[in-house]
Image 1 (tube, rainbow over the protein chains, first blue to last red):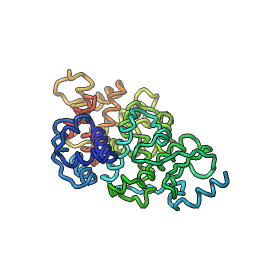
Image 2 (tube, chains in turn brown, cyan):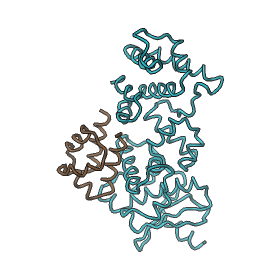
Image 3 (cartoon, each protein chain N blue to C red):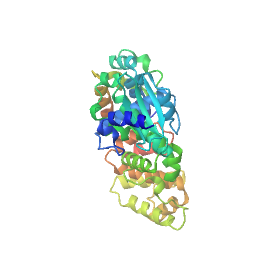
Image 4 (tube, each protein chain N blue to C red):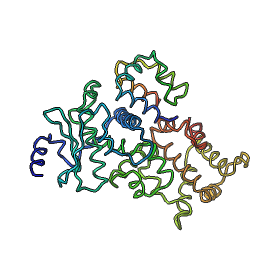
Length: 66
Length: 298
């Protein structure tokens, strides 16, 4: 895994409305199955609270550079 | 032909007609967002290696690009341009008289404009959609030269011309993208491929001495950590705890091009303020060296 996987995940959300909604909802961990994420990344992604994919992306980015 | 030109030219907004697009520095989070968009499209199209078939991507548009058509003409005007028509159809016009690499770069820029004009972009409140050309070049670089693939090319110490050929992009785009990736990953502003490596000829000794000197100029505890790392890698951890001499480091770096390249990359990354982000990207890369690097600078 690398941040490329995280980029692909966000990118998928950017172009796929349904996936985006489920990602932001945070209650559909199964949608992450097709991405090669670590346990930590999975936890972080599911813990992010955001009203929009841009907000989600900023929070994910902040976690990446923290 | 004149009819087509006459039809297209006046309808293009001023910014979109410009051949040289503005490419102002984007905030980091916005760069990341655009990298993500490009990554999402590559994933959606199942593209896993360069060159990215941007022409085919437009010919078989993803559903977010509905009603998008590629028009290939011998215009002699612009590399490529985006145009939305009153009937709802949308065109990317590419100029077949231009070199293929420029056509590809132009189509990638135009694809970004097409995205910015899409319902999905409106739904997302995508930033700067009203001036989509501002980020068009950045998106084109992200789409045609994904950072991970560029880093692989750099790790192979490919000359820039070969990188341009591999990715099917203009040399100017390679220079800019390498600079971007360097800013991210190397910080030197010089691509690894531009460095002389040991064994390249007479300059090998000079560059290894330069790198060794740079390692010895670090303050503690970093100097000790870097020297431990290079010594352990060079000797397979067979050397004890003694601090290596500068001459020993020069010798090790000169004897192993891979070690030189990795240490050079690591030092350059370490020197950039954003090193944690880039090392974070490497956490699960294949190289034990990079895993060690993360421990080193943590």
